[in-house]
Structure formats: C-alpha cells, structure tokens
Image (cartoon, rainbow, N blue to C red; front, side, top):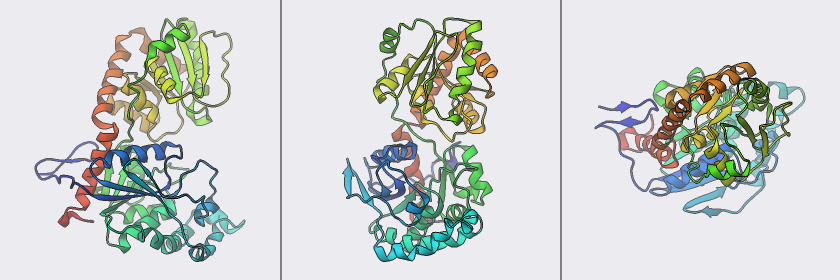
Length: 421
C-alpha cells in the first residue's frame, strides 16, 4: 500500500526508495550567487541532494543585474564560465548565434501592437517556437542525466520539458506561479501539463495548477526550506537597544505589498493599550517614522547574522502581506521558536494553520493591533505557537527534509515501471 501524507510525499511498504547516485539536472533562469528566493531555495536543495547524488544546475545567468523580457526571450544574457558550488556544478545555458537569430519571430511579443496579446493564446505559438529553438540547447547538456527539474515557468519551462522529452527523460517543474502576475499564461500551462510532476509549495499554490489543467496525480506539495537561524543570539539585540518588554519585528523589503505600512499604522493603536511593546523594521526600504511613538526602531538592511539575532530577540514576527506564496522569513522565525502573525490571505492562513506556528488576522491596522495585544497578553501563548512552528520547520522545511521530499519524487520517476506517467 502506498500512502501520501499531507505534502504528497509517498510512504508505506510499497513506496519507492530514492536510488543513490542519481544524476539530477536543474534548469533555471538565475542561480547562486544571484540573490533571491528561488535562487536560495534551489541552492539549498541542490547542495542537500548533492550529499547523495550528482547535481548540475543549468542557468541562463548568475548575476543580479536587470533582466528584461527581451533578454530572456532571445537568450541575450550575461555569460559566465562553468563553476562548482561545492559538489554542485553550475553550467551556463548559452545559445549559438544562429539559434539566437532563429528566435527573431518572438519579436512579436514586444512590438507595440502585437505585444498586448503576448500572454494570450499567441503564447502557445511563441512558446512552441522557443522550445524548438532553446530545447535542443538544453538537451545537449543532459548526457548521463537521470531526471530533469525545471525551477521556472513560462517559455523556459516549456523548453526544459521539451529537452527532457527529446532524450526520453522524466521531467519535474516547480513553477513559483504568482496568480495575476506570472506563471499562468498558456505557455506555462502547457509546460505544467506536459511535465511528469509539478511541485507546488502549498495546497493554495497547487490549486493554481489544478485550475490550469494539471492532473491531480501529477501534483506534489513540497514546502520551501531554510537552514534556520539557530545561530541567532537575541540578547545581543535586546542589550544593544535596551529592550526590556515585548518585541514585534517586521522582516522584509519595504515594498507596498509586504504590509510594513499596515504594521506602522497599527503601532499607535497598540501603544494605547500598552506602552511597553517595541517594534522593529528589519530590511531595506524607505525610512520608517511613527508619530508620537517612541518604541520604534528603524533597523534597515542587515547581515544574515544580525537578522537572525533580531528573530531570536523577537516575541512575534509580523508580516501583513498582500501577496505571498511561501515567505522564508516565517521559517527563519520558527527555527528559533518565534511565532508569526500574518495577514489573512489563503497561503499564509494555510501555512500557520498547518504548522500551528502563528495566527492570521485581517489586513487592517485595527485587526493587526488587536491580534498583537491579544497574543502578547499571555506570554505562554506565543511561546507555544513558536515551539509548534519550530517543530514543524525541523520536520518538514530544513534543506535536508525538503531535499528528501524531492528525492522521493525523483524515485517515483526513475524506478523502471514508474518512470514517466
């Protein structure tokens, strides 16, 4: 009997054990040392898998420079030399000049009139042509590979799937789709349906792929991962800033959708109920100033070490986001036993409910303030939430745990009779 747990991972006496020494090829737009959520996740997973398997990352670029749709469509990306990131080999995807010239018809995606239809049905035609031109470039780098995993959506995902199919390899896609923004266009949907497996981060994420026509049997749910902030020393922060009462931390870039303004507006409301709560805004962005409130610290951009210190010092992480898939900041907070107060958007509700490591509230200053006051009223409550979050992170969302879940998926696809669909 095969049993799938809530994350879609196979267990039971008939489950397939991961074969040692698989040769795994990842395909992605950007790879480390480029900085970003996808890049970080891919690096953690690849390095953890490389403890038992051979891993190669095929990337268009590794820099943090600006990227335009034109550059990606025409594979006009900054070149780099192959290198080793520990046991993981990182190799550029570079198209010869003639193949780049073959992509010229894709200019219709950016022309003033035809460009407005670029993400409609015409995407099927441009995606097909892109896969025919770029797919063989990827396929040439798959010699000896056992399974292909595309950490990408859109036309590059289609090209990766086409490459794997052309050399008769199983293929997995992790799309990181943001509904309403990217990852649900016709080319992306085609790639998802053509892949052997599609990895979603949460069930809310999986719902997007079901809606786009991916079969339920092809979907696996695997969370993102974090190595954790176990090195954080919270007392250093409390001593440096003379913090003696509860500490609420916002962690992230101060972009509109992250909700730092919602928390800032909630602070005076909290201060009217109790004046011993300190608020800290950790991360890059515009300066924070809250009128008539003294206990606000504008920390700004910090090193990873100091970020972990702030999380360890906090009684509560507050993320009133408008849109997220799976913020790593929550895992980092849970790794040191700090609970999370989040907005009531579906993926965050699902995450805190699944782990029991926090609470969701309406995305208004009044609701956030009320939740903060309520949670801090009894220190045992956030303490218990933080411990549940820590246990969930340790069991499901460390790099080794997430890599093991990926290895289970690869085992399904490379086990002879189970190879492919």
